[in-house]
Length: 108
Image (cartoon, rainbow, N blue to C red; front, side, top):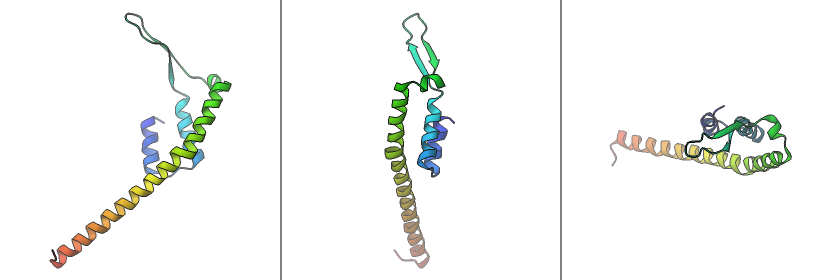
C-alpha cells in the first residue's frame, strides 16, 4: 500500500490499533536508504531495507518505539479528528436544513 493510500484509508475508515500499526509498518519494509549521497559528479547509492535489517536489535527498538507512538498517539488522534469532522458535517447539515426551512416559510 502506498503512503498516500494509507492516508486515505485512515481518513475514511476506522481501523484497530493493530491494523493501523501493520499498515504503517508494512510501508517501512520497502523504504530505500541512502548509503552514499550524490556529490557533484558522483552518483549516490541506496539500497532497500530488508527483513534481516528489520530484525536487528536497533531496528526492533525503533519499531517498538514507533508501535507505541502509532498506537497511543497517532491512531487515537485520527479517530478523534474523524469524529470531530463528522460532528462538524452534521452541524453544518442541521444549519443548512434550518436555513432551507426558513426559506420555504419565507422567514428572514
